[in-house]
Image 1: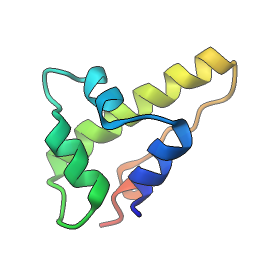
Image 2 (image 1 turned 45 degrees about the horizontal axis):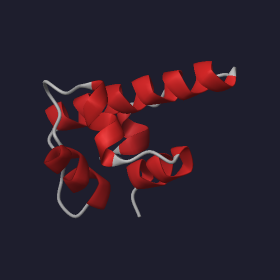
Image 3 (image 1 turned 60 degrees about the vertical axis):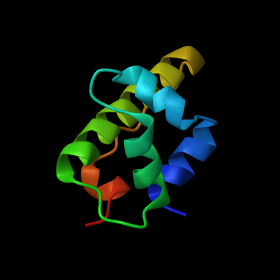
Length: 79
């Protein structure tokens, strides 16, 4: 299980939730490949997914009135 997969499961979020954040740049296939973690994920894709995860985290934190943790690329995709 990858760190990305752990985070999305703890949020109760699906791949589609991430794609909704950046529909013009991100697609379901990119998120699924990153979530499985079998192959290296290109840096550009990592940045897009990271941006979408942080946006999702901010939305959840605002809805629940909590502090939000912003992830860095290294935390999600240990190179």
